[in-house]
Length: 375
Image (cartoon, rainbow, N blue to C red; front, side, top):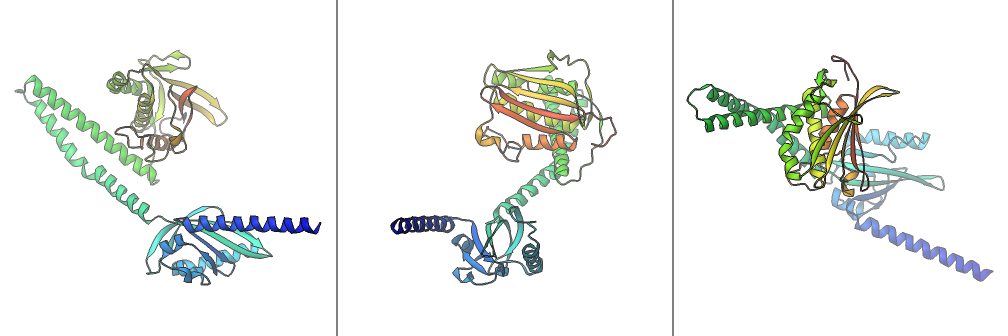
């Protein structure tokens, strides 16, 4: 029996050593900072990732973690630790947080932080996984600056260009080729202006500054325009586009009234239907089905856009995120993201199902509302 006990202790010690070695390997090879502290804010472990992020080496062990917290946040940090120990309230534990941190050279920078906690013999300990997001934030700021430039600085020249084309068309001495070219310039300029105006609206939605003023919209008229606009792409992809009202083919010449912002709704549907066309296999049919349902929350217009293709697995979890793309030529990865913004500002939502067997259904739900009602 003593022999069995010694064997069990030996096995347990081996498992413990293996677990500790695995933990050390993970922490020392991680590019993220991994830091543990006690309830007095004393640093107990400090990995190489933390050294690279903050500029402090192993000398941080035994020091106060408040060294890496900007002074203006230290009192709040200390109060939060004290409150947790006294009450057990886990306001921040387990959540991913964006905070400001302090490097050794005194510069502040943004981090993502995830906290955990545990107790041993009645003592509290805390773990933090820290990621430096300075570069990501810099790229986001640059992207926003470029987008602002596109929205504001390109608009005036385009207005001038379309206006000039209009002046030329009023002349009486243009050849047929020149009239065709001037019409094309005017049409493309107006299309670009419409795109810029829509992008300004989407930017306002992102920032919470957009106010929806619903107006009567003919959904079938939008479908007619999109069918015409997408005709070249449909021919190129060798696919067809059909519209249904319930189970019957839709009469697009008859009106289908909803309320909302027509430009946003058209941009939303253009993005989703174009995605479906590009994702479909050759000789396939894309079906757009509209129905009106009575749900607990009220009456809802459902628009189901179906194509036989399936969404790549590496994109599914990020389908509605900005810049998520499966690598389509010319794709920006903003189509589904902006479409969902447009749906949500109308009080609606976009969801999807996808599989190799049933294809992809992208479903837009828009609550029925009267023109003039807020979403």
